[in-house]
Length: 355
Image 1 (cartoon, helix red, strand yellow):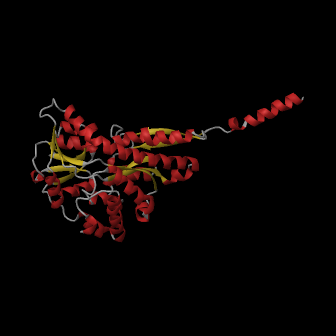
Image 2 (cartoon, helix red, strand yellow; image 1 turned 30 degrees about the vertical axis):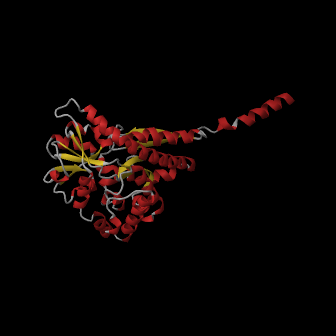
Image 3 (cartoon, one colour; image 1 turned 180 degrees about the vertical axis):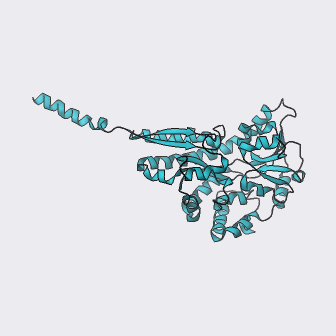
């Protein structure tokens, strides 16, 4: 009898771990762009994978991800509303295409040529997202919880015909995403609104003569096939959006899952910044190699530094106009952003906060 009681007691000690089954949480994660676009692919390889890794440490929760990348649920013009309305639980919100709803989030786009370092830019924007109430509220008012930030590598101008200077785009139709069309003001070029998912067709069909775009997006989108002249200006990097989760869904998640997603979001942001910084140069070289046998062959045109400065000089006071239209919160953000870049060792080509 004593032996039986000891065996029973031992069984009770080990039983609790088997009594509590792992909770499976179903979540849909989506994007307007395909996973060949680096920051979308990293939603899988970094954000999702890191969340899973953290949750596996205790084994209490597991997320069953329902993946809907590549525009299967919504297109680029509906990224915010689709997360807000719960069409997807988690999604990439393309803030550049939401200037009316997310005006403060356009800050870096209205202060171009301030930095060519995406990692520094994302660090400064992360600090603003965490500590600037106006910016945070701008997202949260749409039933969103921001998890990780996305940015761009450097922007250049890709054209169907060769150019030798910024003056040569005068009269051209240049596709650009959302507010980045403002970077063409003063150049004489006509901005055509679009996104990576539309640029190829726009150029191919003559809607535009070229595109203002970034190498890490242009390569997988094969834009070099229709715009073979890669005119390298190293214009700037910009904040482009965020991985966000529907707030109603967020509030239902256990604290352990929330903490895991927040940590994974920061991991994603940091890794994404590094990948942007390191991948830009290689993407340009890859496009030259991939398009060497086409007619005309892909050509990387290194614009002289004075052409970059000439482009900046042509621009009106973009940041000042933006800040004035948005009020005191925007001016405060502009000052904090520019000073954050300087504190990180950056030297803006134009001091937008001191105009």
